[in-house]
Figure 1 (cartoon, one colour):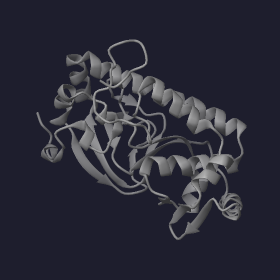
Figure 2: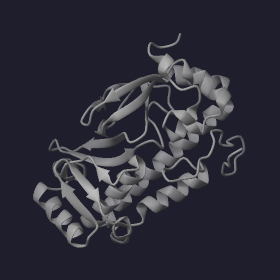
Figure 3: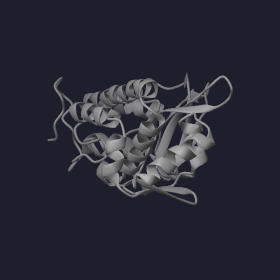
Length: 267
């Protein structure tokens, strides 16, 4: 049964503003379209908490950003992954109804497309290519989490801050990152005064500027020089497994070749 609001969904994945859906073949998108619902969620909205049953998949669209936040024993959250228009959040590979391990929270508000996990499972039963696509995306997401763990262990807060701002800019397409210093400090699991010193250093380097309620990337080239190369490593993996899906890629159509075991290429 089509969900209420599904009539507002574009007729093809390329028009949704989500790169993963843009990689879905037209015949496969037709299996999903009637079950998708468009939502608007503000910054700070929680999609699910640890322990919640995961029965839904969310596809961030356009500049919307969602973070995976692990809750520490003292109650502080720490970000371990960020998902924008390149991907999805929720029951992607499993059949849903499994407890969430971390919090999924909107960091930059905007549009999302919502899909019940059960409807996604039924669509995958009818399409091997759709099943392969979401399995490959799950591999890419896991690689991103692995890289995040290594980054948190090996790189400085300054490098990680630069990486986060670049990642947000790449996903939103905007040099103005709608995020407060308090939010950034919480995601990086550091104190407000610490992140203030880091941002002062980046400001002195001419890489960023601060405004009320937002951070502005002034010189992306300089910021990339300061950043670690973790995002580049993740991008390379995305490009090998799902060519063109990662923000900044060259996805000119929807229909990634996912039928062969080799790295996919556009048809």
